[in-house]
Image 1 (cartoon, rainbow, N blue to C red):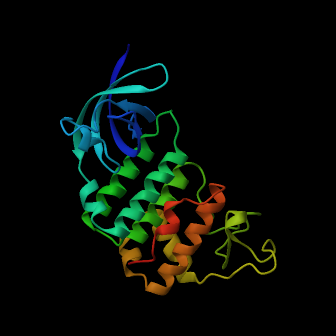
Image 2 (image 1 turned 90 degrees about the horizontal axis):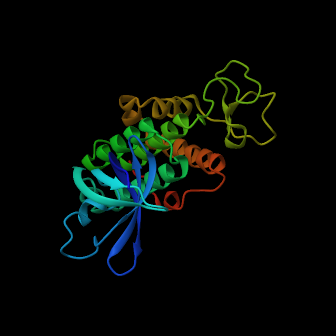
Length: 242
C-alpha cells in the first residue's frame, strides 16, 4: 500500500481494542487524517507520547482501506505537557483543536495547519493570556475558512462603516437600517479589539482593558456558535481569564 509522510498536529484520539488508538490529525499537506496507531497504549510503545492531543509530529503513514496506519512518529513540537498543566490553557487548546476538527476536511489546508500550530505553541509558552489567544485563533481560522465577520461595513447591505451594532446571526456589524429591534450596540474600543484579534495585533490585544476583552470574547463566542451551527463543547468550559 502507498506510504506517505507529513507533519501533523494531533486533534483527538480514541481507544481501539486493548492497545491501539485511532488518532485524528490535521496534517500540513493532506488535510485531516484519521489513522490507527498500533500498540501505542502499551508502556513499551516507542511513539505513544508523540501522538497525544496538542502534539506536533513528523509522521509516516500508509494508506488503509478505511483508516491509515501510523508507521513512525517523530516529535516536532511537544506542547501537550505545558498546556495540560494549566486548566485555562487546556480548555483553550481543547476549543482550538475542536474547531480545527470541525473546519477542516481531507483536502490540504496548510494555512489552517500553520495557524493551529502557532496558536498551540504560543499557548504552551504563555506568550499571551489563554482566552484572547483562543479568540484570535477562532476568528482567524473562521476567516481562512471563508467566514470572517464583518467588522467595518454592514454585513447585510454593505453600507460603509464603521457601525456600532453587532449581530452574529447577520454576520457581524450592521447599520441602523438593517439592525433588527434590540440589536446591541458595541463600543468603538470593543470593535477595535475584535479587529486586532482578527489581525493578530497583539500589542493592541494585550493593552485592552478587562471589560472590553470580556465583551469581545462574548461576541466571538456568539459568532462561532452561529457560524458553526452549534457551539464548541470545549468553549463552554473556558473562562474569561487574561
